Length: 507
Ligand code: ATP
Image (cartoon, rainbow, N blue to C red):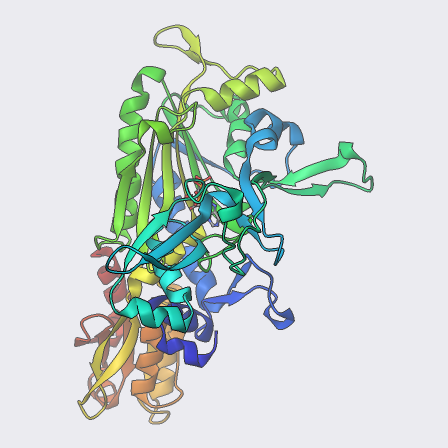
């Protein structure tokens, strides 16, 4: 992404800001990058840590019915046979015989543009996550000659994947546009394979986990036997997952390496519907509470024909990203499917003995499964705001501000001396240390004009800026500037940490 791109779409602007300010970098950028892998820079890593810390605090620490787990990324391959991933964790893939491009067959849309009388004037194929996105992407991709014709008003007919054009000879390649060049779909397993130990024989084949959930199921018995958990209870885990996505896209949204935050909540079968409804709403509200308050956040219940064969109910928590409405987290009632599979494959007992009813059974499980990277991207999209703020002379100037929730902001408070003299830096440093001692993420900055320092913190999403000025020398007060309202308040310098803490508690 170059500086020029920053003038483009909201997504281009966000990507440019994330690169410029050190939220997100392309992995191995100095070698031209690697598709589907991303690095989180100094600000991004703090944002991600804050998301995971908020989740762990709210899901594990503050609840009596939850415990945590940290399982290994590489597990015995039998786990993935029992879970169905070796046989069934596939996406349909098509290849272009002309440009050698490879696409997810269920994501290739053909968009035909029609003139006023319904005659096709142009067609484009695109790989996309939904029909709406597909139309936008096709219109953007159309060559300028066709676009000139489209400008005068057009209609579209969108063929969803596999629907039309049906015959192979009508296929259009989403990359090179070649006609009749796509192969028939083939199954492609998304799991990354590796070998364990010095032997390259098939016995040593292992997989990088494509989800953290199976580590929880495989440890169900261990947790039951070593803790005093009673149904209903949950096991929570945060960790890396890997999927060899056919076409990673939409920035960090579809990556090949990502982090998941997963809960397996075990309960009595008769109570599963109730717990499903509880978690579906609780997980939605968690995102709202951390700042996804706009109508862009949605909850979508799956229709019966969308459900996996073992699932009784499923809902997606979705966010309207600039590139389309897509899933942030899925919540599913997976019945006793996973534990039963592992019981059969491992021969180990996965039943629970209910002291109250004297019954033994395999518990049902409710699974809220979210992605840290998708959550981070949604929080960044929601926070990204362009408004105006007065400069030193009081004239309104455009500003870019990341309105991140204070719990998520990489820096909670920045401390500035107005000038680098009269003992102001020493006082400011003292406040900075006091904030740190209070466990707050504080940043000290004495370089450049004060307005520039405010702007930098606005872009980083810092909710509070504390400034030591001439008046501080007289009455030991400082100003606190609120990022969103731009209101400035004078408070006692000695109370700075307490003030910030109170503000955080109130939000
Ligand atoms: P999609 O349909 O978008 O591929 P999925 O339904 O396969 O997602 P799940 O298997 O339910 O996803 O995984 C749970 C969560 O893990 C998702 O809601 C998402 O937040 C995250 N996740 C899954 N795949 C990816 C990916 N390729 N990149 C980033 N996050 C992902």
